[in-house]
Length: 216
Image 1 (tube, helix red, strand yellow):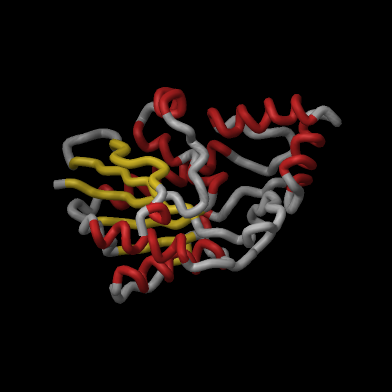
Image 2 (cartoon, rainbow, N blue to C red):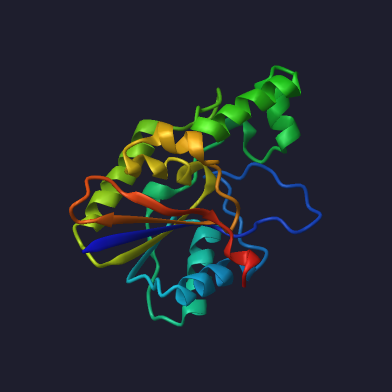
């Protein structure tokens, strides 16, 4: 028997042509499109991966994405808000453009700031000033994964955000190896799938950073 965990990143909160900013826990933007959430649902139903339980961070963008996926799958489920997976707090960089963020992190030198962001995207090294508790986030993932693993032959879906999802590979038991082989930054509307057999100690990543919106 096995358990399956589906992790999705929410859809777009900026329209084409708009300058995106770092949107964290303190900024509750709604989606500006329905394609990402709908395509996630279509991707899952076409692979017969219909969740029996769906969780989402209690933000508009994550809840709306989950609801769109449910509608596309044609299933009758209520989204369960889960505050353990609410996006991180970007501190002084909240609602700032990437150029502004890189300049601050680099002390006025954007290239130095880019190096800091590269480390965040490569191995989740938290930049100075961001209000992030990696140990707590990792513990949340491990606790959630352990809880759903107690219910074999169940498919669970969770919708969260970029800053939170990058810590999910800790459930594989070897984050360092995983991050050396994958880009841990999941794209907007991206999808990740993990599986755990009841005889296994850790989860196996079956798909990472899949882009359903490219297919549907």
